[in-house]
Length: 253
Image 1: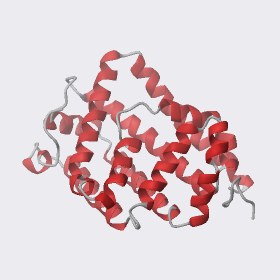
Image 2: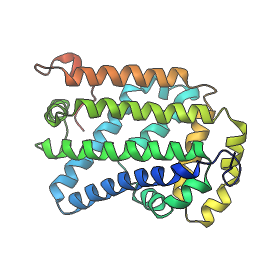
Image 3: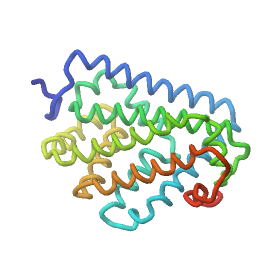
């Protein structure tokens, strides 16, 4: 069995090219979306408004877990590193620049997590951009958010977005229970910084620390699965903007 640098199981040689290609395709999709928004200031503003509103929505939906020390770091990680409105261009550029190296330099478990993260980011960017096109104002209200969400007509992609989010969470929860993998990641800090992978290393270490501090993420992951699934079902429902949907969303941004 081959090992990645720093320890851990490496990807089989036959899979390295396949995984690298998948990561690169998702990163290219994100880059194309950024280029489109850069050329359209109205779209850029509205997508940013959607992202900021969704961050507030996530914080609102998980306020109870944010208030608990055990779960606060994990909720913050999801809000800031997975669903935040900030620009992840530097992290994306680092991943894109070293994809062939990534698939053999890092343990397989880490590579699979990065691949899932990139897939989630590409899908989220696509959905946010589509909602930005459907939004009729630079400000987001609950009613405008629901209308834009439904106008995209991409309920299946929303379910996949939740599935990918859960996958990242489950992978991190599993990884943090592996002392060898956690040690391997810490050992990678120096080589990663020398290789220009500081943002990627920060993301991975932040995730490991956040999930490690929970000492078991079952409740957190179950909350995401239940709450995001329920919200998606409500948002996908036919009919008007009933109060049950609007009550799950924060006030005007």
